[in-house]
Length: 615
Ligand code: ADP
Ligand code: MG
Ligand code: ZN
Image (cartoon, rainbow, N blue to C red; front, side):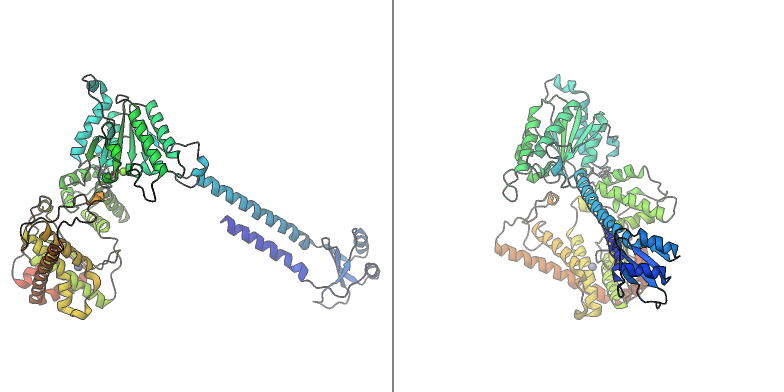
């Protein structure tokens, strides 16, 4: 903005000074001749231009449009003025030329000040911004980057779904409140607690709740804020933090993302990081330096415990480790209840159903879900959130934003057949979880449509998925591609099924290598990758020979082929039904599970299982 203004002013200055020099002079008149002419009454008009020291003279009888004659003036043009006035000649002192010069100077000055001002502003802003390059300026002062909350206002009641972690941490509250109880019997109060878990599961919230319950101040800093451009800044920040904390004991120090400072030393990318090592060393020194009874408890959070320096985990440091996992069904229900407290929900909403439909959601995602639903409700000018908004919010969070329906009829038809393929198999296969809905309303992220099941999560969680269920699931994944092939033939097959194919490969492989559900027999060749979120398991351990690996591939392919054949057969044998469902889907764009099952029953004459397993 400032720069644009400056340019405008400069341009203005330039154009203003143009007209004067554009005026060409006619044959020059001498000064004395001009005086004579004035006396003779032959002069019509005189324009005096003080900057160029000329008078532009328009003579009597001069043609219109002819340029005036220029007369060079001396320093003092009072004589001309006097004479002109006496002879009633129209005389003006030309302002343009003079002004334009002044304007030019002004414009340049303005530009100069704007530049200086802009520069100052940029400098000032960057030195205020946390983490900005301006830290270069506050270097040495070691400005504190941690926050202190005297009262967090968060209680254990606000944290749901992670009961075990809560129970373990209940003790920490007692340490803070009644340390005598422990010191009396000679127990050493732990200094550090490490919370381990994926993002959004409530680690920060839990730490705040401990402070809230104990009624002590909460100091927090993020590991990434320790690590600065300059060696020594991080360390001095650690020192500051502990100094402030000691002044305010009892209190909680919370270090988020501790993996940013606490990585294995000497193994840094690019030959190690002096600054980080110094910071970590300072942290370790501080932790060792205070006695267990000062009333400071350090809580750190990470989702990468595997990269932490082992020195951090030694007794007397973060020797307590608490897992904070993604919530189960019950946990999700609890979290939903917490966040539903301050929202107006319609009586038709069952949080149980919402919890059922959100497996894999973290606490933060559940909170976000309810908030999205509330925003939708406000946008639709309703008084209370209904199941409709919740449903839309779930799809929005899990699948993507709805886009406007396709107009391209051929592509739309192909997508419809693909999705109906999935949906029909969900409905017809005996061991499948039932269809929730099928839609061809596109979503952001290149999703043309989807068919959605209501999973029986308890079965999945408890590991009671049967071989029959898995085979049906693979058949369902392949149902989309099968329908495309049956209806449009090989040539028209789209790449839209790539995620289906991947799901097939993953599940079939699991069956073979983990559950012993193939001809290879009862061998578990790979172990569960339950710590995937921790960054491990990125490359599955291969403890088997190349020969076994080939056998595994064969088994996987065998399972997929068998399921694919079954999917194609079912689609082929139900072609009339498929066509009818596709017409309906093209018409309505979304079909709910119940309507879908009704039509299937109508056409086939066979009753199909409804959503029986799920409340
Ligand atoms: P993390 O630190 O594990 O990444 P946060 O504690 O920052 O997660 O969680 C972010 C937000 O998500 C919280 O402020 C809270 O609103 C919500 N949330 C997350 N987990 C829970 C939970 N277990 N109970 C209630 N709310 C939760
Ligand atoms: Mg956090
Ligand atoms: Zn598909």
